[in-house]
Image (cartoon, rainbow, N blue to C red; front, side, top):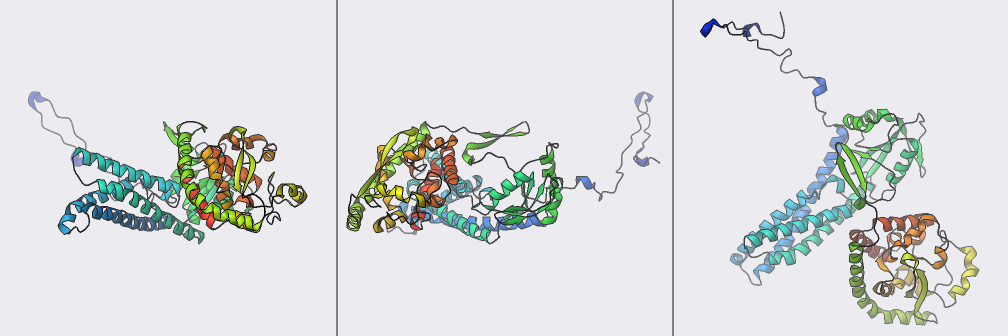
Length: 521
């Protein structure tokens, strides 16, 4: 009997009109019972490693949900009280309260739509804060449009009070949670357990970057390589095991409990390796990270453009003039004018301290090199004796500075007051005058001496493509404790990737460094 046919379905129908006989109808039946399935068609199920990661992510998002709701509600409630006015009773608060509830709902929805609690930005800092800013701005933009079109009153207090207060509160709460998350990651909690795959050289490069990540988001548990070598990879005295071949990455990921795979490079003879690896990791890992060697190219310059299934990574070429630079200059002028007011108030006290400590002028002028190689006189509070330049040659053999820099941790030329001024960067406050004049920017590369510039080679000249700054990545990353190569790398990274958001972040971190100085001498 044909198992694909049902004999009962063979129906010999009587002849119809004209004596034409109806065609026999065969009804197919299932060759397998209904409860059986094809193994290859079963969707991958979540493995314990992936569930463990999802668990801490959900817990963290719930905490963010709670603090975001509290921040928004408090800000809107304050605006509601302001709108109702002093001495308002419950009846007076009813109308503003309804508007406030509408604002809270819209604000929270936009925070969700903007993916401000996405795992990819948790603890990321500026990326997370920018999403919060965009969501807040869009929420009040939509609300303003709706209220204007519907001719509804009562939004003014929300815009004036709730928007700035709520935005500051949201960013501050996220900053606190970020500090908590970094602390947990330092303890080995809330991290991605990572296997790095690729050629041995590329794997070593990627592991070094991951283990030095200040956010501690990745915990490397091993590596798979294209070579047959199995010796552990040594990074800063710590060894990371090579657990097998790159073609067995997915299998090792399942057995080792990894929830993320970082592909440093792919086999030369297998162009479908990444796609196949992604399929094999379904249900096991939360993310597949592809690395490239675009060194020091920051996120704002990178964008992904899918083209018929081909993901193209676009890198924006830096520009050194235009509208964004005009905005930077405007911000420099406004902030330097605001900063000079308190600086002028404390200058007499600093001047008296400098004069009492050692004879000589209060201010120290030094020739520095600015944008496009133009020289200018940089002004600082004097921190050394008046004969400091003459004594430099005698101290040259004790130089502890990196590269062409001349630095001494215990420089005998520094006065007692000068040591205090240097430690807390107070000696650099007069440089806001240089900013106002246009010689410098608040944030930028370190302003070099002419003697340093004459020793530049190759790409180091790129530091002079934009104005030097009072502060910069070098200042918040260790200052004089940095090697020459690291100092140059930080300056070049800033030159090529700076943004207004980056400048604000550096200013904020500079204030913290001034309170707890590191590498200042």
